[in-house]
Structures are given as C-alpha cells and as structure tokens.
Length: 574
Image: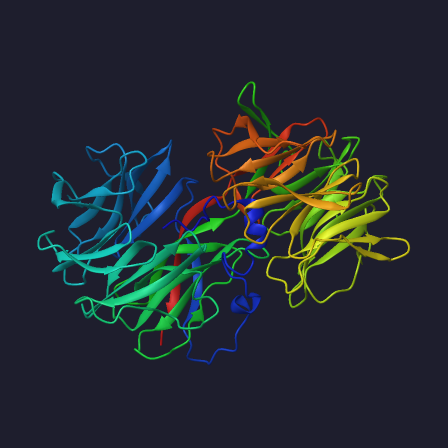
C-alpha cells in the first residue's frame, strides 16, 4: 500500500478527526523509552532521481523499486554499492514487484491491467530469463514465506494460502474490509495483513494462523491500532515493523516497531518526521532497513475548464488553503509541510510569515476590510482555536476561549463578527457567532449537532452538515428556520463555497462523480455538474483534497509535488 493518503472527501476529512488517521495527538508524542528500546541510529538517502515510487524490495546487494512514471509502473534495480540504476526489462508494460524469493534469484511480480484490482502473479529471474505464470489465480498482494514453501495472497476481503509454486490454494480468513499486504511470519505459523475499512475510514493490522486459527486484530486498544498498516517482520522474526499515518495537524507517515513476543508489548516509534516513511524492506542481518521516504510538497494551481489547463499560483511556494482578499490584490496561505501562515501580494511579492512552529495554521480567511486574517490555530496539547491576526504580523488573538476544538471561520458581511463551528467529535456541536468588539456570543437556533458551517456572502443563509454526513442543511436568517437543502452520499460534499450572489453552493464531489465541481441552487434540491477535474494528481492534505475559489470565480487546487526517494535506516533492534 502506498504511504500517500487516498482521495478522501475533504469536508468529510475535516470532521473525521477521531476516525481517519490518528485522532489522538498523544500517539505520536515523544515517549519515554528505555535505553534498550528499538531506535533508528542514522538515515541516509540512497536515490536522488525524483521518480515516483510505490514498492520496495531488497536482497542486501540491490534494491528492487517499483516506479510510477508516465501513468505506468516499471521495475528498477538499484545497486547498494554504486547506487547505479537500471530498468528491469519485461514483456509487461505495467508491472510491479511484490516479493523476492529466499534465494534472491526470482522476483514475484504482478502485471497491472488498468483499473483491475486483481492481477495475475508471475515469477521473473532477477538477472535474465523468461517470466513464468504462478498458478492460475488472481489477487491483489502476495508474498512468500521465509523458506519459499508457502505463498500468501489476498483477493478482496479474503486471505489465501498456497504452496510456494501457487498450487493447493485454500481460503484462510475472510475479513470485514479489504485485505492487503499479507506476510507469513518467520516461523511459518502465522499471517499478518492489513484490513482497510472504507466505511469507517480505518486501516488495522490483523493476524491469523496459517491453519486459519485465532484470527484477531493486533495492537489491542493502543491508540494507533485503527490507523496502522503495511507491516513486515525483521529477518530474525523478533520485531514487526509497520507504519502509521496521521493527518492532524499535518499528514505524516511514521515507522513503528513492536516486539513479536506473543504478549501485549507496546510499539516503539522509530521515525518522527518531517519525512514520511513506508514500504520497508529489512536486511538479513537486522541492522538496516530500507524505506521509501516522502518529502511533502504542493503547488497551488488555477484551473481553466474551457482549456482543461492548470496555471501555477505563487511560483516557488509549497502552499495550500489559499484565500484571496476581496479585491484580489492579496493572498493568504498555509505552507506545506510546515503549516505556517503567510500573506503576500497576489503575485507572491511582499511575503510575510505570520505564524511559526509549534503552532500550525489551517483554513485562513481575509476580513472584509483587509486588516486581519482569521484562521484555525493548532497547538500541541490545546484545543483548536479560531484566531485573528493582523496582516502586518504580531500576536494572534483567540476569538473565544473554549474547551473544545473550533473550526471553519466565516466573516460576516459587515466584517464585525465571525461565525464558526466545532470539530466533529466534540461533545457539544453547534454553530456560533462572536461579535469581535463586544465579545457577545450568539448560538444559531437549531444548530445543535450541525458542523462545517458556510455563511453566504449576503449574510442571509448558512449551509451546514448533519452528523451522518449526508445532508446539507440551510438556515434562513429571515425565517429563523433550518430546511433540508440537499441529500447526498456520505462525503460527497467537499469544501463547499457560496457563489458571490449567494444563490448557489458549489462543492467538490470526490465520491459520486469522480472529482467534479457541482452546484446546487437555493430553492432547488438537485445538483448540476459544473466541470470534471482531470489531469492532476492532487495533494492529500490534513483535511483531504483542498479546493477553493478566487474572487473572479476561478477554481484553485493543489497539485501534489511531493518527492519519493529510497532511504537507508541503520537500526538498533535489541
């Protein structure tokens, strides 16, 4: 499984703080580790080619890297001694390497056929030779046991076991979700794998005996258990190395080690960023491992539907969450990956950093008089706050001191008030308005249980989401009533934006219509497609795939410019 997060609805990602990728900040906090705890002693970058990478194998002399370039997958061999890279020639135009045989003579490969989820399995001699089909079955992921006598693979929700040559296939376990990355333990007695549950937005590690006995989820009630995936044993089988992805306050994938003692050992964190690591390949001497490391970067772009063209914004800046001033002359944004708040001229000049670590900023918005910026402030150990800060810099001010996380700042039409909601999962969801001068607080009637509010430019309406993520509710300040405006599949409404005339709500649909911008008009209950988004790999930020509008109505997105390289980690595994 790639360590890059998937295309999850951005509006849904905002509210699934407790479900999708590490809701508990304490999980990734520094832990008091004993002197003999597993640790990474040093990290060295091996490749410097800038090519996208999706899988990694190692035989202590060479790395076998599945690369993703020009919309197809190819396999490359990288010498650990010289770092020389050469492509592995096959008759397949789109193929990935899944495993290497115990004698290091053959690769287990899977030709990929378009959008098909299940593929054939083949073996390919490492040096030269003709590929051979392994059995007559298809699946998603596969790997050999340490002695090569057994093979495990997944197909849909099922874990299978076969002989090493692909014969004698039988079902071992059927999961509640999609199974991937199965591996057989060093002693050949167990299979560990990842189960992805789309409905719950979780990934978890499971184990089952090779005879089908004792299936169970790993890691017990450890806070990262439902966000862990893609593990493998060290060569001696004493440790199991896996990865965990967090998305708050920024997307980061870290490596963890847990002793394979059969007890309730707690995992130890091996990496802590800023590089995301995954797809580990352990060495035979257990002193090193190789991993794909991702350096996050994003390029803000403006999209022209008529020309299907993306134009870069803020050249040289790695940025997301852009908001242009009402006159279009200024812009505020959040840097990737640091999460710092900036403002500059629309052309990128007169840049000024407004916040710095350990604070992280998100979702900034200009005040109507261009004097202040409201944003979400995320600081370690504190509830999220809506803050305002002068465009000239200085200290930020909380709009209201509360004990639950605030999000989604909306300026009133007169610029004197801010409306906001709460992070989903808070005990008391509602929508409030704060007067910035008098500090008086108004609770929107009937807003209990609603979140992610959007205030129309004319100040008449509020759009918000229901707790089941399926309904967009509309509040009319004239009638003081809520109505069910729109019903959609959960997560289909992402980053909604009001039209400048307050007659329509636009949103990014990532669920039902394959990345399209749609809109619904006030007074209507059906949507219409505005345009379909094609030709861009979008950056998966902390709140999903960001989208926004410029003052002239142009749509903005963030292109993924992250780099993926192979790193060597020298490890101490006592």
